[in-house]
Length: 352
Image (cartoon, rainbow, N blue to C red; front, side, top):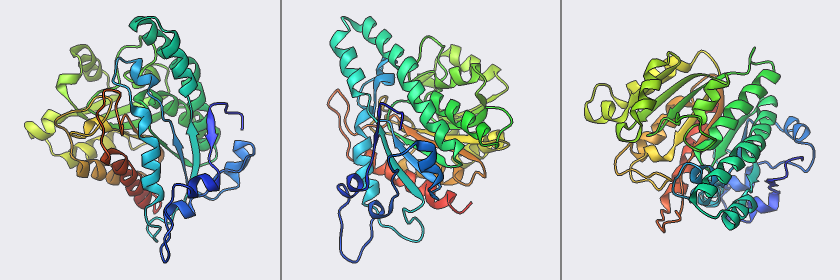
C-alpha cells in the first residue's frame, strides 16, 4: 500500500494483544485484517462494513497550544476492544482492524529542531497541513469509495478536516453523492471553528466549511467559557450551523440532552453525516482539554447510540482522549470508554 506513514496490522499483531480463553471467543479473534496488496483491492475483497483506523498523534493538538498526549489512547483502546466478547450483537467479523498512522518521526524531528515555542507551533501546523491531512484524507477516501464506514480513533480534532474531505470525495467517487460535501454532528465542548490561521486541532470545521466539503454542521454541548465571542458570533450568523450549549442543556435546562441530539439530527439528516465525539465534552475525562463538568460517560454512550441509527453515516470519529498526558496525568478508563463507544456504534448501526 502506498501509505508511507501507515502501519498495517497482521493477524498475529491482533492476536498478540488478545487474551485467549477456553470456551470464549474474543473480538480480537474475529476481526478481519487487510492483506498486503493495493488498498482498493483489499477493501473490495472484504465483506466487512467497518474499517477501524488509528491516528495516535498529538501534533495537531500541540499546533493549537494544547496539552500533548492524545497519541497514548490508541493502544489501550485496541487492547480493550480486542478483549471484548464476540457475541451475536457484535461478532467482530463486521470489522477490518486495518492499522494505524505513525507520525512519531515527524514529531521527533520537530521537537529536536524547534528553537522556541513559535517555531514549534509553526512546524506542527506545517506538518498537519502538508503531511497528516494528506495521509488521512487519502486513506479515508479509499475506505469510503469502497462503500465501508471509517471508524477513526485517537489523535487531535485536527483530523476531522481530512476525514470530512476524504469521506466526501470517497462517497462522491462511489456514486453516493452528487458533489463532495457532507454534514457533520459533533458532541464537543469546543466548536472546532477557530480562525483559519494554519492547520491545528481547533479549526478543522472552519477549513472544511470554507472549502465546501462541510455542508451543514451541528454541535452539541458547546461550553460558553471555552469559545470566544468571535467564534460564537460566526456560529450564530451561519445558517448552515446549528448548536446547543452545555449551559442551556444542563444548567438553564432550556432543553434536555435527548432534545439537543434530536435537533442536531433533524438539522443534518438529509445527507451523509459524519459523527464526531470529542472526549473533552465528557466530565473529568482525560483529554487534551479536560473539563471538571460536562456530559457523563453514560450520556456519551447514549449520544453514540442515538446517532448510530442514522441511515447515511459517513464516518465515526472519536478523538482528543488520552491515557496519559505530557503533564503526568493518567486515566485508565478513557481508553476503555472509547472501546465501549465503538461497540455501541457498531451494535446499533450494523442493523440499519
